[in-house]
Length: 558
Picture (cartoon, rainbow, N blue to C red):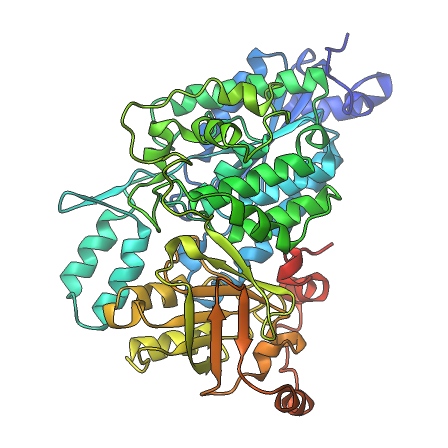
């Protein structure tokens, strides 16, 4: 007799003609009774390459315990993941955004191949979390994404530090501001154990956005990686998933235009990563929900910035969770009319019902109020103009000014720009232009944290230099930086036509990014421009280049 909620897997496990399939599964250790229960896929992005995902086997065991207790049969499988932080500043970083597509494809394939009745995806860093959500959208079976949790802050000389401090220390070391021992001290202290990068960088931005979106169990998902409460929170997530399986509560019931707008507002209110733009565009596309890059500017403009989180502020993700976490932020947004509380979440409760359970730590300094915000507008702006007709993305939460005008310093790769910064060849007022690092040109839109950290660690440059790229920025980036410039250089976008010394004007209030060169001159340059050869002719990168769309569409491959 089959158990309630077993829908998809009946053709795989039921009836005399499925004896061979059951035989394989019984050989693994599943019992006859196990196979008559709902079969739940547990997609694990575990790897020992880096702290973000190293503990996810333990998380998976707790999730599976909860699934079994609630009447399901979990079946765990693995997929790949790439560490942005480890690959940063190398050719390996090209694999990062590409991995989002590969992870989504692989989770979808295993789930379709095994006819799961439900699925839990366990993610721990920048690309595997949105990838899991993209796969859930495609499958549209009861499912949730569970975050492995943030790392604890490192400690150095009595101060909390994160990986951002290491990247900035590299810049300080290059200038001779600290010695080898000083750099070693920061390196050794910044990552004290398991968990994703501690600030409101991309991992924590996407984990929070997924909670507000409703596809992650709010507050449970945000428990830090090494917290003693993590096992119990993960076990409860297994129970929540089984409740969703029995109710046939699917991603299409949860991920709607309203819930995506809620998630965008949370990114704006928290000073979150510009990568949130790419990933939420991609998630919307998977659900066939109309969403454009302009929606981010509209929502951010009306959503004040209230979370005092690194890199724009003082605190880290564990402080955010301790303050009250995403339930508290949701409560603030709903009360201010900045989020729709009627949307459904994976728990079966509305966002408003979940937010009503928020417990705010008295006197907490992290999640401020909309009546007394840090800034009157959210952390993201979209710039257009003759340099970015399709749009570009800037995180103003961590910027110190709203306008810049200066001469272009043009680099056709991140590596060349970083070398110039390290050699102290950049002058105050310069505009660093890094191109041919877009979705196709990179390929894969490398993040530029190594460059931006080198600039922001230099007081003479951090307050005067601007940087623009058709690539991306890490969520840890701070400073006057504009990314996702589209169309990209590889397809002949205007960024490809910039020459050394051209004047570039960034006008944040008017949302303009302008190359101060006449239209006639730009037209002349366009006739002289020739696309460079693609950097990869075969393999996964070549396949990606053939399919990938503009950053303004989320760099999707469908």
